[in-house]
Each structure stands twice: as C-alpha cells, then as structure tokens.
Length: 209
Image 1 (cartoon, rainbow, N blue to C red):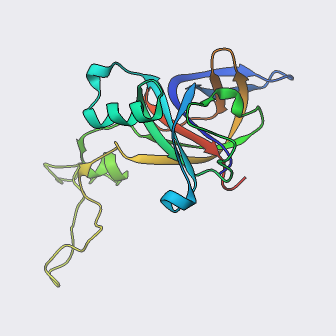
Image 2 (tube, rainbow, N blue to C red):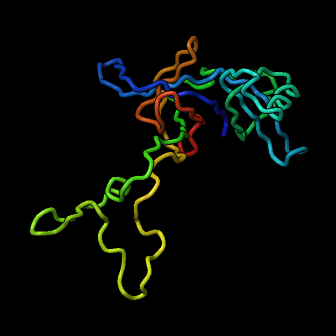
Image 3 (tube, one colour):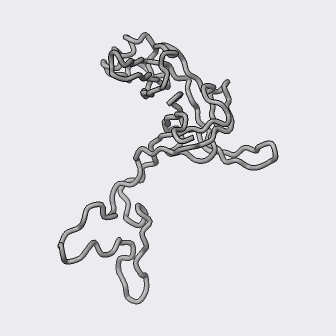
C-alpha cells in the first residue's frame, strides 16, 4: 500500500466527461487526516501510520484516548485507522494528509460498513425463490423450503437461512477516481461504494491495479 486516507460518504450524483458521457459517481469527503501515531519495525515489528479523522470534543473521549492524543500532541479525532504503507519514513506524527494525495485517474479500493437491515428472511437475505403461491400450496410462501433429509436428521452447516443481513465490512476493488476537489477535500469515485450517507470509509490505492 502506497497511500491511504479516511473519508465520509456524502452521496451519489453524476458528472459529464469531455464528450458528454454521463458518469455516475460517489462523492467522498476525504480528510483532512492527521497522523496520530507512527509504528516502526524496530519497536512494533512492522511499519505503519495511524490516521485520525473528524474533530471530537474531549467529553466524548475515554481516558485512554485522551492520553493517546496527549502523547502525540495532536487534536482529538473521532475515527482512527492504521495504514501499512510501503514507505512511512516521509510521514511524522502531526502531519496532515488531504484529498490531493490521490489524483484523477487513480484506481482505489474502498472499505465501508454496509447498511444494516436487521433480521430478514432467507428470500431477501439470499435471494431464494418463493414457494408456489397457487394449487393449494401454503399458507406460507416466503420460507426457504426443505432444510434437509431424514438422514442424517440434522441441518448441515452453512445452510442459507434467515438471520442478520447487512452491517458488515465490505471492500470494493478497482474504483476509478474521476475528480478531485482539493479545496473542499472531496473525491469523486466512479460507481457505488458500501454504506449509507455520512458513513465512514477507508480509501487506499488498489492492490490489483
């Protein structure tokens, strides 16, 4: 990983390229992020930097978090994320990383938490077929059907059943950066990304580009 940043999903819109083609994009408020901690191979066994994003008041912090930021000598930040960069020597505690660390045309991977949909049935959760709604079949039409056979008289693991749907970490690979607004710290990425509006996302350069 060469570069990374923490951002907030603003929403989706569309922009036009030079020849008038419509490009659906997601707008992300990326940074400014401050380096709150630097880890080295000598002390921690690996090289990485910890970034902080979004201001937060002291009354919303724990004693451990207050001590962590006091040791670094940086303002309080609400969200922290560690990035293992190939070259961390150029960054020091207190440095600020903004959206212009990326450029238009870059390929990025974006990680976020998907929308939580609560406890849902198997049809909505796994896109299973409904049961026949005619010929006297019923009264239930949205159940998954047979769970197994008499032998071995149990349900195998990993069977698609109702349960918690959403609210899981998902990474979308190889998204193209269409436009950068360095003044407002905005990044326009082609396509959709995980999460709802105002959700926190982590942006890094693509591992498969």
